[in-house]
Length: 524
Picture 1 (tube, rainbow, N blue to C red):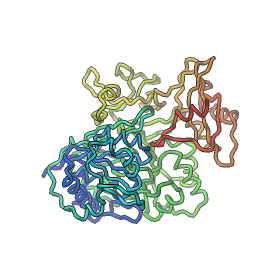
Picture 2 (cartoon, rainbow, N blue to C red):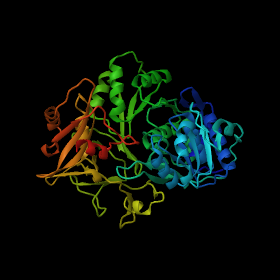
Picture 3 (cartoon, one colour):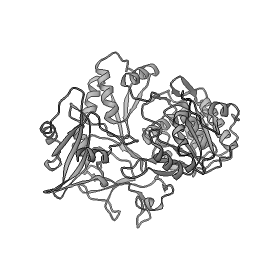
Picture 4 (spheres, rainbow, N blue to C red):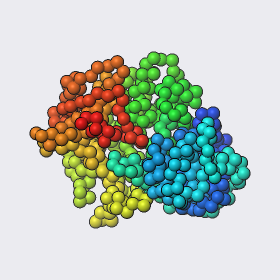
């Protein structure tokens, strides 16, 4: 049977070529490629028997665990569409995503499904619920246990033929409003975000070529990011499709010492973190010594930029480390590696098909500001949201389709792209535009700052002034003067914060992004 770029086809190719190769480690659970594919087949057969049809949506609501990955591939096996759901969501957000996505089935952890019970009446399309045990005693009526469902299901691979057009959906927590479901074709996500079968080189030319990755020397990737988010999920899938062993960090709270112990135990070559919020504790733990990092070659970051300060702190302990800091968005995929930046949030050497466009979809001249845009392997649009799709995905006069998610950027003379931040949050101070992320990065680079969020407040003289909510490191004292002095060498004068409020902890949204609404209320 000819294979497609449906992700289940790709897993089956690797499982056939290297069935006994280690694929997944999550807590006490371990899976070879053969076992992972077989358990995913059982999930698929169970869902099909429960009436889930091709093209229908299967929501996954769980922390990092082996079953998360099995469930995802299980949906792909029957050409259904997995929908990752954020485990931090409150009832209203859960209701929005499960209803907006038209999910027909839900595979979730018992304690998290308890929240779904509150809104179950508002989900008429949800017909089938599968429970993953997590120690909770919550009653989930009319649900079936995951292990029992798998034990009773067929482990074989006799499924209808799949297609490269089969869908992949990723809900993204935008900076405004409720999350939106970004809808991709499997082939486009594979090349646009999952490394195309070769993360550091040329992509494969046909699905069957993936089999060669089962003969590569075994690599190990320790993924500390949640796999319900794009960054963590893409790293896990990129690892699996390259034939690596993917180790998921399964504790519900990030502990740098635990991550480093796991790294040593599993001989991880790549460590995936989420920005400074994980990188700084890791640097601190390394400074206290006692961890074997001899296997580690690279540190990857996604979901948030790694500041130069965090990189320096890691390099002090790991002088030969490579940083794989990639720019990506749910609407663009993974776009290219960071090359260090003097200003802005980060500078990237982008892949072909990625550029900076003006409002008429023409490329800007070097030094000019426009919006980051990607063509080629891009999403179809937002599920169930034609107006939002029309405001992000455009077709130029020459027929080229572009994804323009709203990140402002500058094109440099050498072809690199400097990111400036989201347009909806731009601060206009005396006619000058300030991108909050740029100021946040500068503030977080201060040795005494743990976290920071920057917003624009109404100002009589300048229209808006730059203001920051700052969480100092425990025991440290920070002042407005000290912070402006620190930022002065990095930012133009008009970008410097004019007001700060100190807090014990900076609040973040359910998807870990800066909570600008909260920051504004704290400052006002």
